[in-house]
Amino acid sequence: MDAMPPDGGVVVPAGSRVFDADVLHVVELTVAAADLPKLDDNNNLERVRATISLDGEVVTNAGLRKKGSTSRRPLSEKAGFTIKFNEFVPGQKLDGLKKLVLDNAAQDPSFLTGHISYEVYRRAGLPAPRTSHAVLRFNGVDKGIFVLEEATNEDYLKKHFGNGGGNLYEGPWDFPKGAAAADLKDEVSEGRTRDDLTALTAVVMNTPDAQFATQLAAHLDVERFIDNYAVEMVAALWDNYAFVAWNFYLYHVPNGRFVMLTHGINWPCCNISGAPNWKADLDPLNIHSDPWQAGPGFPPGRLCERIDAIPALAAQFSTALKRVARDAFDVPTLLARIDRAAATLHSRPLTGASAADLAGFDAEVGKVRTFVRNRKAYLTTRLGL
Image (cartoon, rainbow, N blue to C red; front, side, top):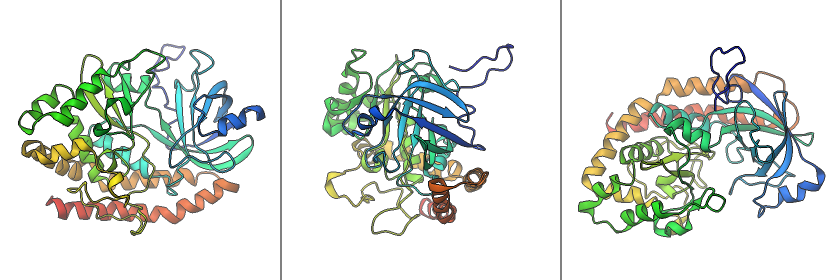
């Protein structure tokens, strides 16, 4: 997965250049005119051939498709993409990567929400995608500033768990919907079965409280899940599993248990319709606060509800919540990451859509800094830190 230099020197981890946060990267995508209708079709899941240049390194015949659900945009606007370098050319990579996410940050004019939230995950001891920033041109047209995000693929899973071959299920999804409704990666192409998720779902939905912790631990890394739950609540990630069962993966580690993983964080913390932007007082003890203001059609994560209802697990969550709020949500660290991003985004003159995005960043970055400080102050009081 990592690139070995020809002289046998130090191994350079895959993606080291792509995810250098001190560089405002330049991405150019070129797609043949005949393939544009297929690429722009929101119902199309097949990739089209594209040429990508990233900071001058060119890869041809890469596989490109649009990404997102609520963030999906037409090509005439600012579409986000995933690019699979080895889709049409086996073994092809860029900077040691097989895949890359080009996030349009359609809901986040600060371009910072994932950038700082993933830092909280890492400080809490949990895996999180690496990110950096880039300006993107699509068929010669400036499309603005994007967030480059590390893909949750086999290489990512192998890096963090030693084996990337297990089943990977993607939200939005939750246990009451049943295992058959979940999105299982490579199910058809690799003949995968859902027996593992079926068994976990049965535990979550049917096991009595008295046996729940023991039976759950046989299928799920409960400590890691509770830490993940704590990060979501501390960082006010109202678009992830706890609040609305969105933006997550469940990965079954081969010969092990399920773990929950984060990805796709691109909604500003509590930038909710009808509420002040960058609201810092979302209660970390209440997953029923309905931050989406979407009503009963978007219930909170069922597994979090069960944990909250069982005293021993609730106590474990309370301990994790305080630890994450105290140690992982570190104001100086997060402010330094914000300042670093600001310096990077201002590191070269920008024009067109990229300059407009930079102006949007400048209008929002102060709010992000204020959110970080105010969130910490609220957590300190609310949790008695």
